[in-house]
Length: 524
Ligand code: G4P
Image 1: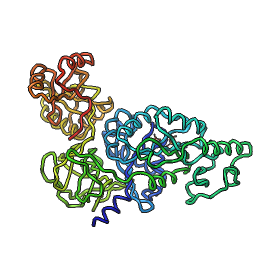
Image 2: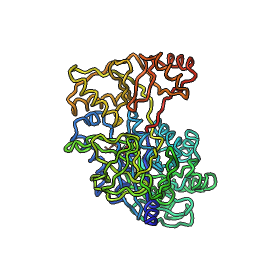
Image 3: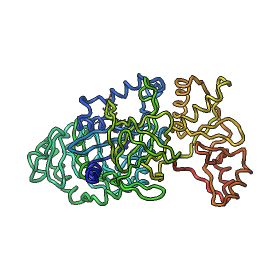
Image 4: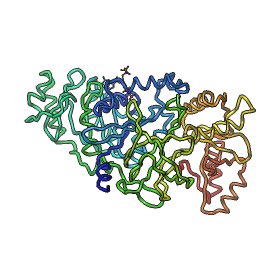
């Protein structure tokens, strides 16, 4: 039994793709899934996106704005390994969703457009990965187009991200002459992903390397490869796992160059499911006891069923169908009667899931983001973050008679992580908080479509909020009493301080040194 568990854990790779919109994340996802045989035809991922959009009303927003709002997981098997690819929304207004998803992966692939280099969102997402020590493999995409000089791209990664680079492959040609990649350490060439094995060569000058290029480009290519070998760092797995170095691959997802390299690199080098920190102890992935945490809730994945799915990452043990798990927040048991795996275009009931796997648990509001499930032990995983919203609004109901229904609906939306909800202590109407304005559009559309509640938003008197706490209970009580009209409670009942602006926040914070004001809160 222990042996099976160890084997299952060792063959799992749970990862995300981070990139700036348009760099090629969707195309790469599609090509990776093709390797796993998870989809038959290229184009399926996009086709699916569209189909889903047309099926669901509130997703009209997504269609109108041409963005992907939904985070999902795709599982595929290749070469004996199981890959769990967690997708993240491309639009920055849903950044908090992306950050939560990144808490559930063990590594990431960073896709860079070869012509554009490091773009703002790549940088932002990279910083989140760095905070969590997530190792990164870099893919320089679109080499079949006009691109920057590869050395320049490597320099930019080193400078902008303060991350060492180790080019593993080198592009043979660029744009129209791009003909494949040369593996620097193995001294071998692969023309396209259809070639399973690389062809060994004596050096870059070989007929099956430089010989693939027009005469006038050969010399430059040979020089580049020699220079890359002399001047660039070799790949160092330890440094990669510690997040200090990124192996770099060149290719073209669209034309099937370099994707095989990525999947091979994930298999050979990417970390297997890592140990996770809980409040009481560190949980190792191959421990027998089942533990998992919820990092995402998604409603209406299939509008025909009006279901709500909690995405849970298994951290240890075996999550099996039908088991009774303990929901640590409430102490109650939850029966996992139909946990699901997600493939590119279908769901399948999961009989057993192991560390690294992400299962969807259908439920009617029992599970929240940040919840820990175990097979009995009372421990709570830390680190699924909740960010202080940057936009605060009061919700104005068109039909004043439906106040109670609105409270319920807002509570559910907050549990799903669509918005954050703050209930003012002085009894004034609820305040919703979001990180990006599009989240408000989603809230409005869903309240109308799913609850028949047309609403509008009004600017609140407040624009900043912080979670407050103190070791000095009396000081906290005193602060709460004194600022009652600026105190609200979040979904967990924890107090937040609402301020009109950053200036007044600082002013109050300086006058209350015993109180801690926090912009990030871990779900628990
Ligand atoms: P994203 O998910 O990161 O936003 O990017 P996506 O894969 O949708 O790719 C953005 C555009 O870049 C698409 O073109 C896609 O076909 C193109 N692309 C992706 N990888 C490559 C590549 O390796 N080489 C070249 N030349 N193009 C690539 P589009 O015209 O915006 O969309 P579509 O109409 O082709 O779907």
